[in-house]
Image (cartoon, rainbow, N blue to C red):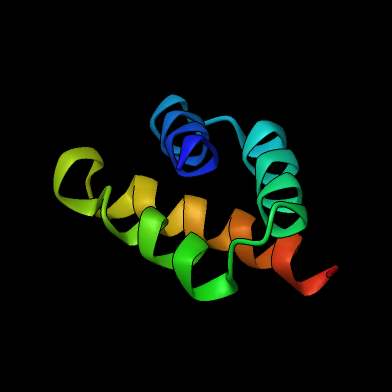
Length: 66
């Protein structure tokens, strides 16, 4: 669960490279693509649509490299 918290922190802080790094690490730890994507979507109510879409795009870049 620590990996999901770190993803949320990166999204909230708007840190693209950190988010992508933590996504790769999360996958190594056994999280699924769906779990990672769900964690990003959960931030929409708090962070707003534009920040969530940006994080989603950053995540897709990282996930497509795996």
